[in-house]
Image 1 (tube, rainbow, N blue to C red):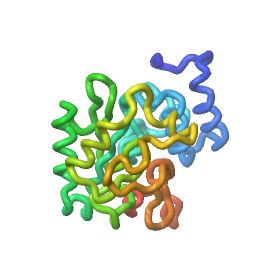
Image 2: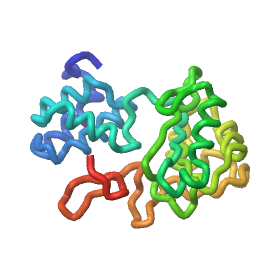
Image 3: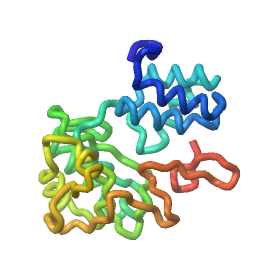
Image 4: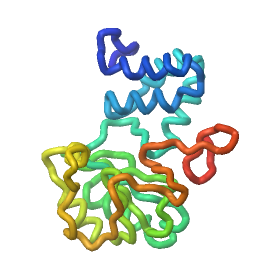
Length: 217
């Protein structure tokens, strides 16, 4: 994108439609950010500045929301994404070791994508799967009770020809069933209260969005 998205860029149209649908009000920020990510694959500074201007919001507010939720990405993603939960339950049960070992295996730091574009390594405050700690979300599939060996095997078996999301859209599993001892849930993980943290912003009674832990940006 250029400093201002070109009017002829069809990818920006869903973003504009989302903001218009919400009357260019601040309450439409999260929907607009989702629209950007669906269209471009990630949210860059140009998009954030354009949305901030359209919704009459400070850039710091837009940036704060975009970095608060783990399902928003500020850089192009790899073919696959690995989100390691660092919530209390997961951390106590070894999530940090999972994160460090995966980072070492792919030569990257949390928040980065491997040089071959195969894997993006991310972290989250909570993915809503505390009962399966330590939990990791790979391509929106929750892997529960993970350990360094089984996680490395699982990641190594992912297809390299696509990003996994296309296979799921076609109704195909990301990997062959039973290929790995990690406990898995379906491709749309739900939190204990029925909210999918990978696709949905949780709201508290007052209408303010939270990250699933009662925290607000």
